[in-house]
Length: 378
Image 1 (cartoon, rainbow, N blue to C red):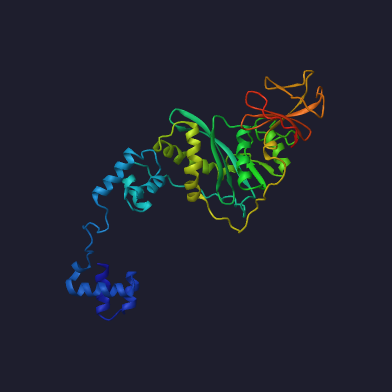
Image 2: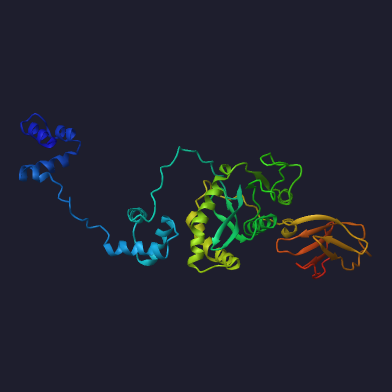
């Protein structure tokens, strides 16, 4: 009816083509096509002939059924994005939006709620190595088992440099992650972490951290010249919290489809397979070219990133540490070390060592049995 009114005014010469097209809110060429169809077939010529017909681009019913069957049987616990990445392996080349709509229309996944008010993200560091995040996430990664995933990622690129499972997060797991990063990349500028007890001493819950009584991790980072930054809320760790959510939504499904049930096999899968694809998918380019990493060339890294405890040597030339007795072997430079102050180094792999100043007097295995005598400068 609207077109007929405008066309009548155009036919009587009261409107030009451009004015008629503007009134209808269409282009000049569209008005020309509508006018030709109207003059040839009347009002019926304006009907969209596509109405009531199936689109030639519509996916076949058997393809839709195949996608739904895959989701219901093999990928039932995958999110839509993760599931969509698996479809090409099954011969389905469709867009993410198509996959999401198929699953939503079939009632397999719920529509996402509307997002809340806009919040401004903290700006990333411009160079890799300027600030790293380290945290642990306890989760049921395989059925019936809860482990802690310890990961260390770059703030500038979101690249994960280290990730592994442990039974419980703590000082040793933090050291293990730091050793893996520094050995592969070098020294970095700062580490952003929560206020867990292995990072900071906090006098009371909710209080500020006690910088006068450093933890073992803080002592080691100070020795390496790396700043440790305390995060005071989950929101402050938003970048690492979002990455943990990504791990939790994807990694259990990958472990299940790979048939992995043990922590040792899971760590091999992480290092050899999963992290490569994870970093390819989620790493973003830094805003500036270059790197803030610096090659490490100082003292043995393992003797810095370890627990160090001072002890006094007993009258029998032994040191007691964690209910174990460590016998100091004979030393051609000194008859004994009775009453001397020494340091016990407790390493992430469970081995031990005794140092007197810069000299390593002895190393021990997990059962406190002496290993090869060292007596060398650290």
